[in-house]
Each structure stands twice: as structure tokens, then as C-alpha cells.
Image (tube, rainbow, N blue to C red; front, top):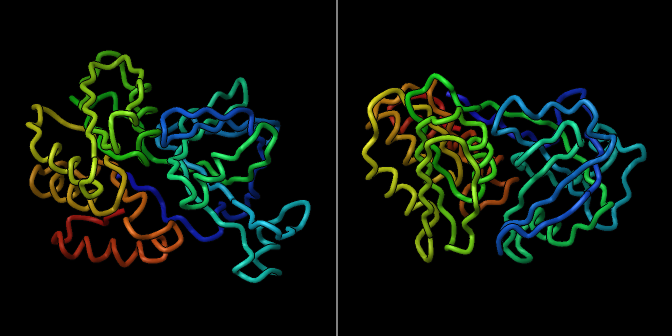
Length: 289
């Protein structure tokens, strides 16, 4: 089972300083999804084409706070109080063009709520962006008999990237939960893919997704699954896959990207305990993510 590593507070790999990029362009993909394309010489040498769930940790500086130049996160940690550190938010890579040095990231936007969404809504060409990474761990297995992709808006960029990377003619069943029909996107793939858009409406996050995947008649053969999004529904689908369906853990990439009622800082602080409880509740079938 591939998992997204724990997202540490520093937002960077040990010994690797954050990269500096600049906004190239901004596009409103749907009413609640904003696409930001980053570029610049700071992306030289970036490797973001091994996996389809690559992610980066973006540093959002606090307004009115002056940081050391050249920017040094280690120096910030050592010399500044914790409440003045930049906020760190983790986002999946939607696309990477090594020839053009362009990194595309999609942001879910819900008005003034949160940090990253409002930033994306205000972003202008030339704005600086510091980030670390990428990490990642999943890419479609070309030897699988069929593929299951399931997630909400937070997983949509990785699901879209996976569909684009699927082997020609591969059998794929994708279930994507969004708020309503306006949030659907045109997804490109050479696979034999059945894409089911699920509209949440007023239902709790993940309910329509869990219902759809639970009621789905799994095809014969070995499945390679990618299940990501809100931690509550991920927990339920984890039980479905590992216990009820008996899918081998090494054929599933599964992770709670976020948890209802928690920002990323709060979710990461309690994620280890949540994982331990999930494992205990599900009879030790493996470590949740």
C-alpha cells in the first residue's frame, strides 16, 4: 500500500531549501477550482513525472512579517517564534512540463475560507511562490487487470493526472465527488474509462462516494486502487477494500488528505493518533494514512 508521507511542520525535505517559483498564469477551471501555473529558473532540475500523485508543500508567508533573505526556513525556525513561521499547505501537482519549466497546481476555493484558496484567487503573474518537494508514491500499474480511482475535490488533480497516464485501453472506473454539476471537469484519457461524477449537494462529505463505491460490482481480476480525500470516507472505503473485498494492501494507494472540521495544521497534529485508532478499529489490517 502506498501512502502519502506524514506532512511535517517545516514543509521541506531535510537539507533541501524551498524552491522559488513565480506565478505565470491563473485560470478559473470551475467556480470552486483555480488553476495556478508556476514557472521560472527555480524549477530547474525538478523531478515531478515519476508519480501521478506528486505533491508539493507551499509556504505562505504571514502578512507584515519580514523573513531573512536569502530565505532560509531553518533560520526562520531557529530565530523566529512559531506563530510567525510561514503557513504550510500541501497540494497535489496537476501537471509538470519539464521542457517549459511549468508546474500546474489546482486549488479548491471556497471564498475567504482558509489560506491557499484565497491566495490563489488573488494570485497575479509574477507573484513569488516558495515550495518544497515533490513527494509522491502512486502511478497506475500497467499490469493491473483494472483500476479504481475514488476521491473528492482534493484528489481530483491526482485522479486527472492518473487518467492521463493510464495505459491505452486500460479498464478504469473513476468515482469523483464534487459539490454539484458545475464542478465537473473534462478529463482526458486513452483508457477505457467509466467516469462517474457524484454530486454531494447537502449530503455529508464523502457519503455519496462511499455509497457509490460500496454498491459497485467489482470486475474480475486484480485491481490497482487510488482512494484519497476526506479522512472519514477514506476510513470507510479502506474497510471496504481491505476487509470486505480482500484487496491486497500493496495494490492500494489510500490516504486522508484532509479531515472535516480541521485545517491542515490541526489534521497533521492528530493524524498519527487517528491512524492508530483506525488500525485498531479495523483489526490490524494495516496502517491507515
